[in-house]
Image (cartoon, rainbow, N blue to C red; front, side, top):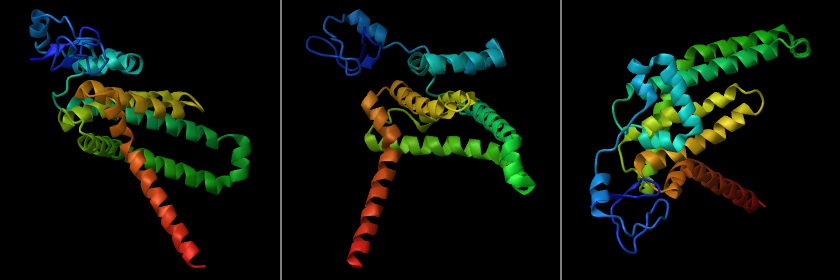
Length: 248
């Protein structure tokens, strides 16, 4: 029988004397049977973005951004784990395209700084503008492909660490709504760094809440690709160094 922890609200499989919540460590002693029955009721899921018909497009978008950025635990704990890919995909696409447009604007403005323009010359200016314009046109494909690829890799990592308690769709939803962190990129200079760090934090929180796993397991899944890349790089460098030493 399952019960809901009175401290963090998570669903746990055991309760009673001597048992503790695996998520927050709170004691589950004294949880009554009626509380356990109440805990097994279907959770109430809600996401403002997926309630656009009632809230309106802009309010639904704004409410979702605010909740994800400033109250991610509550948002991801109530996020519907299933319900279709269309809504989350549209949200992630809008955020991704908006950030690319902002980046394009900043890059374009930098080209018109007089000192830079004089040093670079018209040839460099034209080539730079052509490159940015091309990326702007192909950005929709890049954003959409990036969301699916990121979700696929992250869900594979979840499977490896034993944290995939729900389907790939749940992980995809976490990836799409965690894109909200990229909106920090509109802040000049440090915005990109903040966006990257906060995006990782949101992914960890989102996976923990949506898949109902521990923070450590969620963090391991998020950072596993980086760990693997660092490990392969280290092995490659060691192999190169060994071949170099053998040459002498």
